[in-house]
Image (tube, rainbow, N blue to C red; front, side, top):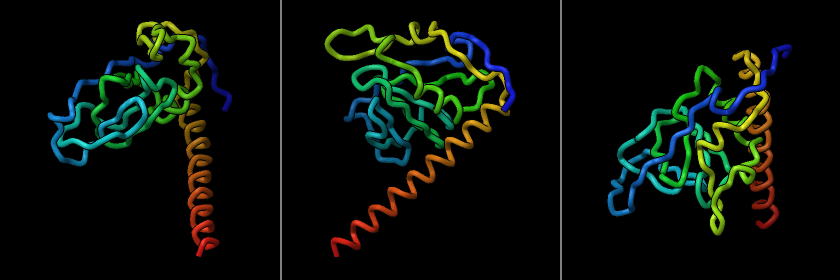
Length: 162
């Protein structure tokens, strides 16, 4: 991984956009995940964004980052990546987890971030897409192993209880 990391602004490498309103009374049964600032919160018949997608909380719960392989509906409490600008979506997912969102919070009582402030954040980012993919692959493999260990622990716990 000898790629060069460049200093840029977050807005140079991705474009964030605010999610969409969808009151509960307007939701229709379907299989499209509705993603709020705390993750998948419901399903709907229609998608607003084509996957893969990366979503983070913009209001309320900030700092959590979610990845959706499938098409999805980002709620208005979120920011989602509208344009990856040629960068690897999975790498962007991992990268956004490193941002200290509290530094960009502009709300007093309830935490919230302004996408324009995030776009101006100075970051160090790998310019080479193959480096991004290698890093995302390694982190994804580790995530898969962690999930497998969680599942094994749950199974072993259930066996111990029995």
